[in-house]
Image (cartoon, rainbow over all chains, first blue to last red; front, side, top):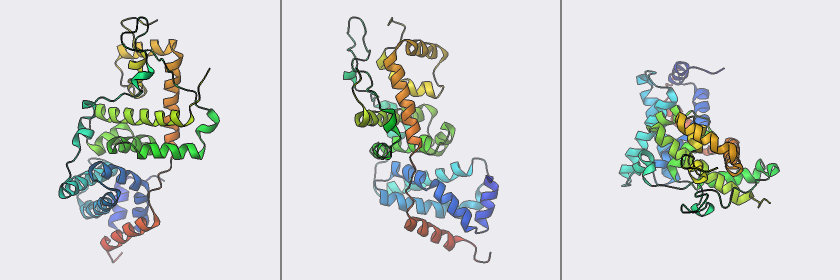
Length: 209
Length: 84
């Protein structure tokens, strides 16, 4: 049965290892992805996650339930990662998180549409989406390609698509955990999904007609 | 069927996430649906984006190695009250 945050916190305070293990298994991949927005390497992100858990455990008595436990843990992670990034002398790419729309990005290459000055149909598809063979969509090789495409995304886009589409978080949860606006969350999600679709089309797409 | 009011295909693909997230204004939602109703290529694009979301959802994040889990449990044991 799903336990409430208060029950989880009580179990952790009592030293219940199984509760800790469940939370670690559920959140680890997401914690790593979010940490990687701020720090330069996977190895440092692993350290940040470990330090985060230490801070979380040390601060459990101060958890007041004003946000969800999940949001609270991810906030602590973001702070830990930012501090670590500064120590590493890294310029934190805040703009990628706080102002992603500043640099425009096309979901689909502009050369797949008719030019703006086209006489009849400016901006209409000149090279429409290619068919994706249904039977190969859920093949494990396709999933592996998709996972690789996600790994290749900029860190902030990767974190958002991971939380929303892999972990199934709501947009509110993602906004709260990353401390970003709805609009920026949508921009990051949009770009991530568009790039993954492009990768899918590159891999599976066959010319129709 | 493209007039000045309508979205072009190129504009529409940039609105797909806003559409799926229910974030379009009522006026833009109407323009979006009017376009989609008449455009096979954009219907296909929208369908593929839904497929993409579906497949991404089938990925299992497998980042927690047994070693990493053991390390984190050691952190927990080092912290946990000893007299439970």
